[in-house]
Length: 293
Image 1: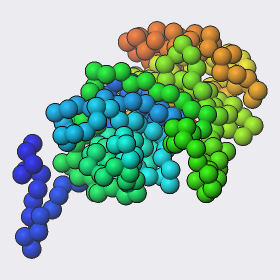
Image 2: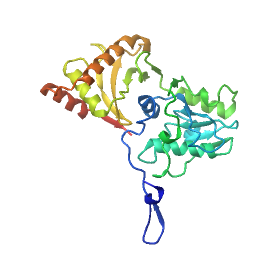
Image 3: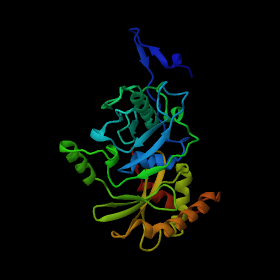
Image 4: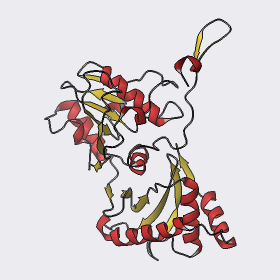
């Protein structure tokens, strides 16, 4: 559909811009979709490098930009004095398509003067390019999880209110770490309780059905001491959550999570009709499901 067909005029002759279409899986088609969802919903302090498509961004743009979970003052983007660009995955979505909102943040930052934070973005429209249009989708998407927000200043010395602000931000970070060996799986400690969250990259219906098959057989738990609490939906994907021992380390769960991932893969590959018990398990999972954004 061309641009002209997206624009209509009202009775007074004013141009009306079509609203942004809602997208159930906004990061589908990007490398590492499940980790994009993690960056958008789950990870408190994380970064990743994005490679830009030279034919889709303004001339003179850098080859890469940094995706950060959060930026100072909740800015959606900034362009440092040296020209480097950062965009925030968790700055909030103003439309029905977070990928298009992040595309707006990227293009705004690329056009900004060096040294300029971006406190507010122009309105996202149906004509705003999506991330899938702007970044190289053949380049890998690799997330680095940080203990705090020191990456904001990249090792530069800060003092006064800036240092105090950074310290406050670091104190608020929920301890989070990846579970080695199983993609898109994160250990986190919230208060006195500790959880593992596993973002499943399959379509929601496939993931829910596979989890129901496992739940009906008592195989959705990591083991008797690490039981499935339920699941939530984020970015169009399903995220099962297990509670684990409060004082446990991420490395202690690697084998159990890998075993679950193998069981899940077998269940997801099955095309058998659900049994009555599996249908009840599926209904139970859905009734307790929470949707994040």
